[in-house]
Image (cartoon, rainbow, N blue to C red; front, side, top):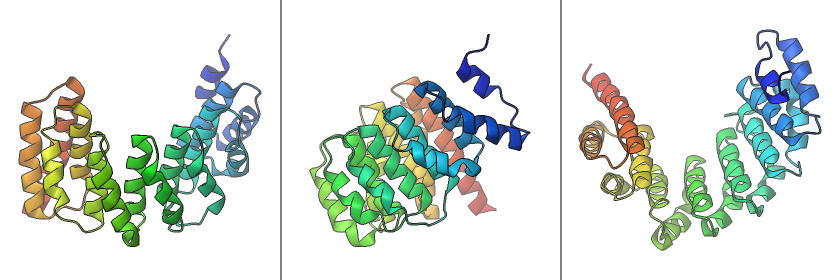
Length: 249
């Protein structure tokens, strides 16, 4: 007999009407793991017909269900530039990943009313929350909060978080952060190296910056610290090379 989670994953995604009906039923299941798996399918298949049920699960008692529901809501409303003030209080939730998912979702949705509520997250006890807050505020165009991000960047002591602040400040117009991102590629820890490399692949770099970044990432790839580090440099190197080749053509 199939386990519920396996049965959910095996549903026919081509029959949308039946899929919505089935997932809607699973979202009401007493098992939190079943609800979580149903949310993952709803997210992946963008079953926005279930929006009301997903919103209801954002107040679920189980943290992991709540986090999936927040993530799912973000997928339903990606880039809609809507205001969801009722989600802002979750930025102060005691659970770290709930705050992170909320930051990501508000960014994904494009809620430009959110940055003022995100500022407090720059002072969170957890570095991951601080890092996601910085980049989320920047990507939502929070230029008037640049000084707060700069202050938080100067106060940041966790190296894993520092590339996120550099990326955020670059987006807010501080071109000097480009050199800092290059320097993180020489970190003695794989995580900031990978974070910096991924930032270089996503940022709007000038042609000269793209070429410099490509050379720096290639060098980091030759001097990798771990398999994950090497893999990231190879992937980012290909992305940057495609960008450089496009410019040449």
